[in-house]
Image 1: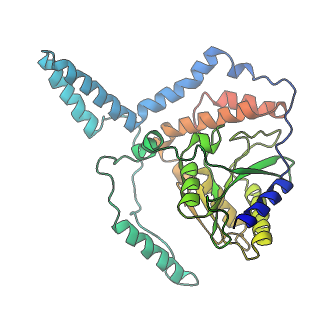
Image 2: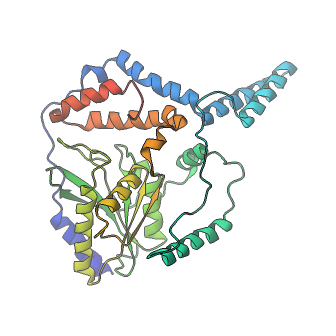
Length: 363
């Protein structure tokens, strides 16, 4: 296994195009992103989004209640009564804020039970249902927002020292994009599947530093499943730079080019047909689904799964809670990342991003 990995590493380093040359020209952000008044205007949608967020509203009510109860312990019984009222409201849910979208589809596993893939789908559904029957959800972590936020705060960041090999390819439009190979501690095993991970709206930080779902998945599959992992890096994120053609979620050619390279490289050095699977998170899940629609005749992957990817983006526009709360943060971070990572060739896009940063929406 080690010898195969060494040959594969040498191949990756030989074929890598390297990071794009840095533009040494002086770059400056437009005035819209520099002045303090404009920055305050940009932050206002985030403040409003935070106030509409159920998690933050309930937490604020409970914190106020807890403070009043503590104050009541110093001879102020009225404070204790009001504090208990605030605690009850926080636990029950503070009224107001953005409404949740009414759920009309019953939770479950949906697939064609007949036809060409009926037997396979039936097996997958029964496997998931069997696992779910043994799953005991956390009794106090009932909010979806809490389930998303707390892992970032409480989980151990196991990926900070995870070694990886970055490889660069040059796309048809001239931009170079990166993908990171992560090998298991025991070495590359040709008999084990290879997992391709697609990130969501990623930050400027590398995935080992930012932690989160991608980093945790890379650690788990390499250390627990003895599988090799390849992380596709979205253009302009995770220590990468773009010169002209920025990231957008409808582009599937980067994934295709990376899979072609990965497939041929694994086949060359393992001597067997590689088993490649893919998993996408959020925006990465949308790209993966779009990729499967484009390359369904020859996908180069044996299977794929997506987490939190939209099935109907147009219908999701009716989800006002999403639009008015956490999407404001996603939009702000995405537009800011594009603005500060873009070169002068896309200055008009930078200025456009600066103008819509104030709006705080994803349209």
